[in-house]
Length: 484
Image (tube, rainbow, N blue to C red; front, side):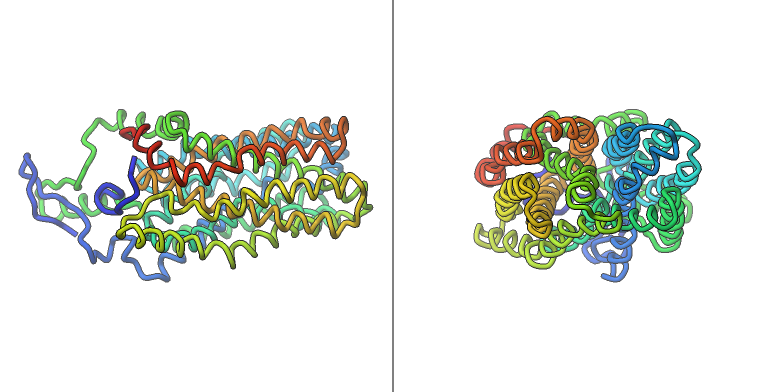
């Protein structure tokens, strides 16, 4: 586990160094200005990579919610109930969380690019049988499997950004990438509403087939490998073929392949259950995602039933939180790097992961306030614009928390950033997928006021977390340090 104070050998293993090891093998490593080092790539190449993986990270969450305006239509077409159709969302979101447990460590074993392309190709193809589903069982099964492969962008996006950008410049780029997991579920119902109303629910999945295929083709054409050990392994093989002598990669792990693979597969869960910081932050994010999906899956009932919106108008209601994401991205996210660099300089140029956390306190305050605002304005049937305004602040708070926490994970675990992020993703996605199953019964029993307030109180209980970890996180990281 990294202390976040540097980004050299301890952060990324491995031009050619003619140092010889004990076995008289020349050692391959990056030099400071090596053009193959992803952190020395031209900005255009870095941003192309970011754009492709960000689109992947948009499309899979988009698929999670895009069909929600058509739940009633699907239930009628497949001769089942609305509650059973919601299971298609639950299966997708749960497997969206389980996927990173496997796909993140695999990317730290085999490299990023191949995994992105294989998994997203499968994800695109699985939209076809989803569109052709003859019954709800097929719909739920195929959706669940597609959630696993669609998680590749979420599983490895943070690690890929860490591969290419130094800590001092990372947060702003990461903010744009993180729009995917949040903006996808927001835009999904809006786009889905248009398809459901004018073309029918199956066209939701035909649209996903087309756009996911386009994204995959762009990946094959323009996506570059960014994981340093994978690049150095390719260089090592090239040198051995041309020079006829043996080489090794700096800090090379010489354990048997099966041992390395088993270790990498265990890594996300090891991080989750041995690191109090990750477990606590993941619980916080799980509550936020559970809240988000609980609200989103009930917008049809709230705005369609209570406020009399059309399907398209219900889709537009999701843009409240989307507006909050954009406000956060423009005005708050750029300040994360500013504060991080300021605090590092203030402390003799020694950066710490905890310097990512001050702005998380904004989200910690806004989330419970916005939820209580939404809960009781809906309960008392206040004008719809007032209720949607509360979701703007909810979206702002959510992206602030997610961005600061993900950057905190990356700085704390550096080389294994993908596994650290996966550890958080699995927990939040499983909770985010399961909670909405039980929420309609809760709302029926206690109403929207107290029902949504439950989520507000839970988020309020965890609101001191960023402040506590800012002061005591360093001690916790030292006390629970592990060898990954």
